Image (cartoon, rainbow, N blue to C red; front, side, top):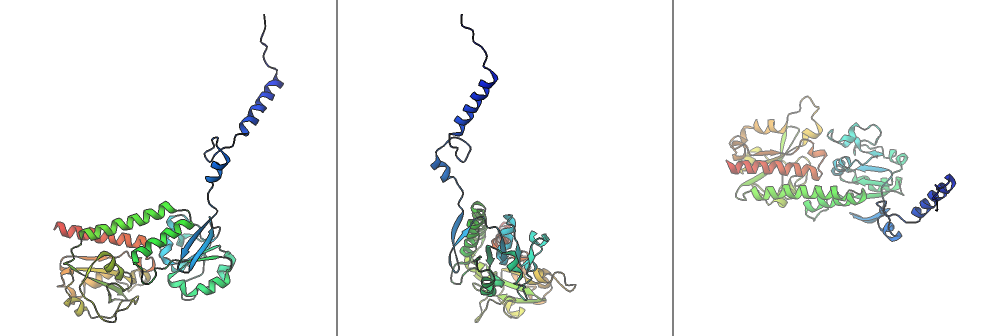
Length: 339
């Protein structure tokens, strides 16, 4: 009779080694399971992306290792996505942006007197530039010649809403946040759709800017910040004037002229709320508008149909700012319809 003897310890060790070698000979795919080398290669993350900005095509190594940020419209997006900044215009950011609490970021100051030399030591490989810092594009490019400068300011002649979407979409490619970028686009589109569905074109609208206690006129279509909303949302202007501008304080116009146009809706950007809120003499736009005798009989005031942009708008103007405002506007329009 054959007797089966247990394997000796040495034999067991040899068998285990052979088993491990056999397992190791099978290539694993990106999920840790057996697969072909081709499958493994196709699952690898890209090491660079090619994007288009206002100045052409750029190939960017991803993920960037050192990021500089000098475009107000992008600060909230970069912050929400958890992008680490090495150097930025922190002094230009509204307090609502988390970067203002991060002492590790080198602050070059505002666009008025920036210390651009500080950018050199940060050695950025990507520089997000735009809005107030666009004027320093060539200076920064000369200081960090190996960095890729990305400028995504809304371009003249292009639909403003599309430009806001383009901005976050391109940044989504650079920072591998494509899904998050698409969500921002979807949220904006949904807010705009609400406004269009609730707005009655028979009701006229007026946009104003309050700065230093003065009320300025924001021209439909081209005025600062709120001007493009008239075009994108299809609003009917209560008043149009010749030689209007994009002035950041709005165009000079008498409150009597505003009152005479009888707007059903008044849309307001409070510029001072973003830059002067710490001033002891600061008064919110709502207080100024409601205390102006000439406006008291205007339908928008009588019906409480005055909608204010977020307080940090003037220094934050990104897609999130517009989405928040459009939803507030839609809430007001829908409430007015319900009586």
